[in-house]
Amino acid sequence: MLDLHSIYKTFNAGTVNEKTALNGLNLHLNEGDFVTVIGGNGAGKSTMLNAVAGTWFVDEGKITIDDIDVTKLPEHKRAKYLGRVFQDPMTGTAATMQIEENMALAARRGMTRSLKAGITAKEREFYREQLKILGLGLEDRLTSKVGLLSGGQRQALTLLMATLKKPRLLLLDEHTAALDPKTAAKVLETTDKIVNSEHLTTLMITHNMRDAIAHGNRLIMMNAGHVIYDVAGEEKKHLTVQDLLAKFEEAAGGELANDRMILS
Image (cartoon, rainbow, N blue to C red; front, side):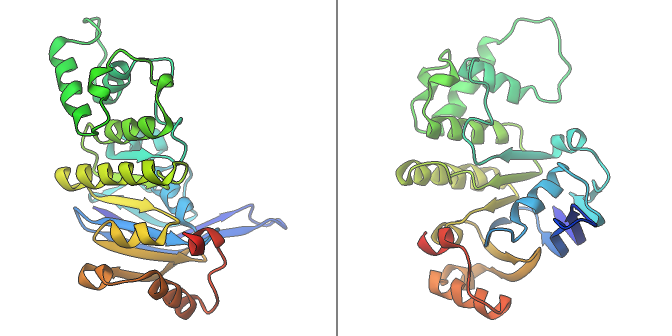
């Protein structure tokens, strides 16, 4: 479903601020893989997601999504293949619009616009049924402005909107990092429910090692712009945080210089 082959990306090339963010990155995801991604600051995690999304073009290499070469496709032309949730809960929804209006925007993405009535009774019932999945009572608040919701409610709504039209690939860029622990756990529970029920191929970046171990069927660790550890199945299930720290030191040749990961 996703193939990254020999990906390179350098920022500020030829200047004193030159930074190689992706350095020969190779990664292959089969359909239905739920891959958690960890690594220190500057490891290349978000750069990889942005490369897949088309936020910028890579310098070298090839990116395919569901056997479609998207390497040179601009971001807006890749959007139909992707669902994405960012770290900031305020990013994925329109605060001044109602919940049902936000849902309608997500449901009609890529469709031809018409002069028909805004939201039909059938659509409204569909949105209500989908919102029940979240277990937050939002199905009874369809006409509430999204700006009145909490950060956790907005992030859960964003996740639902990103998957309303089943994407070929779901990108989760630390989508619980800005939430309190209880709310983050609820959003992760919802993530598992949606990803598993829809059989979505997913890449989830996280700084929380316990979350990386507990969620998904596969875990990769990045450092210096490439994958240094890739584990799946039963081996992943039996990992501990200490195992991951040891693997980093073994693969990267040094201690994990990221307090957020160690403390989490």
